Image (cartoon, rainbow, N blue to C red; front, side, top):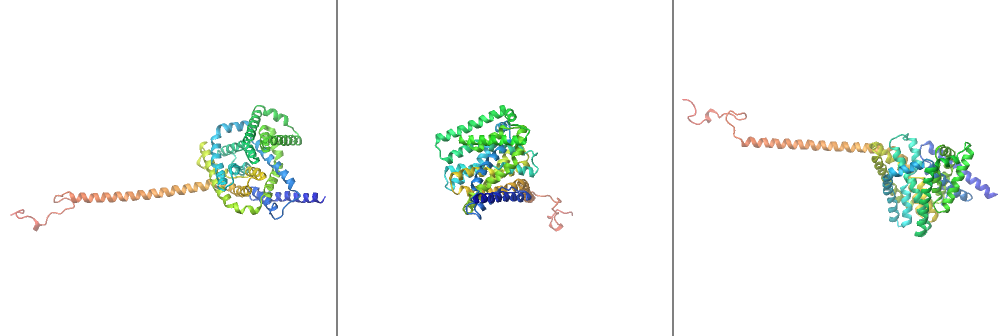
Amino acid sequence: MHSYAVFLIEFGAIILGLGLLGRFAGRFHFSPIPLYLLAGLAFGEGGLLPLGASEDFVAIGAEIGVILLLLMLGLEYTASDLVSNLKTQYPAGVVDFTFNALPGAIMALLLGWGAVAAVVLAGVTWISSSGVIAKVLGDLGRLGNRETPVILSVLVLEDLAMAVYLPIVTALVAGVGIAQGSATLAIALGVAGAVLFVAVRYGRLISRFVSSDDPEKLLLVVLGLTLLVAGLAQQLQVSAAVGAFLVGIALSGEVAEGAHNLLSPLRDLFAAVFFVFFGLHTDPESIPPVILPALALAVVTAGTKIATGYWAAKRAEISVKGRWRAGGTLVARGEFSIVIAGIAVTAGVEPDLGPLATAYVLVLVIVGPLAARYTEPVALRVTEWREARDAEREALEARAADAADAADAKGSDGAEAADVPRLPGQRGETAPAEDERSPGSGGM
C-alpha cells in the first residue's frame, strides 16, 4: 500500500509538473519539448530527485507516447498524398538525406563509436520535428504560403522513410545477422507496401468500418486497432511505431479528422511522458563531455537543413524569400530524433549517444523556431549588405578607371602637342618679336 501511495504521488507530481511547464512554454510561444527533457534530467539518474516507484509505469507510458506520435502523424496524410509526394519530390528527399544524415554518421565515426552508432546518429540528425514545425507554421501564419507544400513534402518523405529506417536500426542494435536483418527489412517493406496498397484501394472501406458517430466508440476502436497493429508489427520486428504510422495512413476523411481531435490530448500527454522518460535515462553528468560535439553538430546540420529547404523551394520555383523561409523552418529536431536515439539507448549501443542526442535536440528544438522566424530577414539583410558593398566597390573601380583614362588622355594630348609643329599665329603660339625677325624680312 505504501508503494502504491508513493507511485500516485510521484506520477501525479510528474503530470502536474508537465502541465505547468507546458503552460510556461505556451506563454512565451516556444516548444515545451526542451523543458520536458530537462524535467527528465532533473528526476532521473544522477538528478535532483530520482524517481523509483513510478519508473515502470512511465516506461510503458513512453512506449504509448511514441505509438500515438506516429499514429497522429499518419493521420495527417493519405496514402495518395504519400504516393504523389514520393513521385514528384523524391529528389528533395535524396538531398535531405545526403545533406543531413552524413554529418551525424561522420561525427559518430570521428568519435570512434562504430558503424551501428553512425547509422543511429545519422537518423538523429536527418529527421526534422514534424510536431514542432507544424506548430511553428501555425504560430507564424504561414500555412497558406507557397513554400509550405514544399516543407510538408520534405517532412512526408522523411516520415515515409522511417518505415524503412526504423526496422533497419532495430535490427542493427539487436545485433542480428545479415540474413535475419535482410528478412526484417523485407518484411518491413512488404508490410508498408501492402498497407499503402490497401489504403489506396480500400481506404474508404476501412474508414467506414472504423467510423462511428459516438466519440467514445470511435476513440476505443481507433486506439485499440492502433495498439493491436503496433504490437503485431513489433512481434514481426518491424517496429511498433511504424505499425502505428501505417494505421494512421489507412484512415482518412471524417474518421481521420475525428480521431485526430479525440486523440490529440492523449498524444500530448503520453508524448510528454516519453520525453521525460528519455531524460530519466540520461545522466546529467554525462552531457558536459559531449556538449562541444553536440553544438558543432547542431551548427553544421542547421546549415545543411537551411540549404535543403532552399534547394527544394528553388526547385519548386518559389521566390527567394520563400526559399529562405523553407530552409529556416526545417531546422528544428525533436520527437523523432529522440525516438531513434531511444532505440539505441535501450539496447546499450553507446553510453554517450543518449547524452549527445539529448543535448543536440535541446539546442535545435530551441533554435528551430527562431530560425524559422529570422532566417529570411537575416539572409535578405546580409544579401542587401553584400549587394551594396559590391555596388560601392564597382563604383570605386569605375571612378578609378575613369581617372586613369583621363590621365592617359591628358598625357596623350601633351605628347601630340610637343610633336606637331605649329605655324605662326596659330593658337597657343605667338609671332616672333620685331627684333627677332631675320634681317631683310621687314620693309624699307
